[in-house]
Length: 75
Image (cartoon, helix red, strand yellow):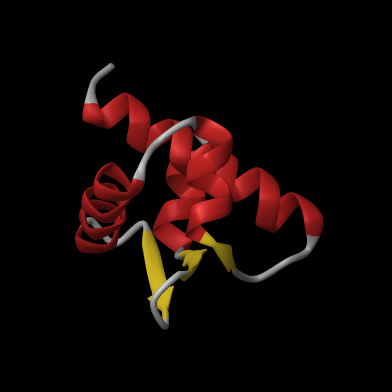
């Protein structure tokens, strides 16, 4: 499975769990657990999506979608 595909799956699940439920942020590990990625993959993926401007971190594990992340997910 490619990193882009994993990233898109992660963003879709994050959108589903937050935007669709009226929640601003969520623990990244909850998303990772649901899509089947482990700690090292999670660290790399979250760093990549943060660098790309699709998500922002709050503390160590809380994350939320940026406007660009929402737009990418809604396409």
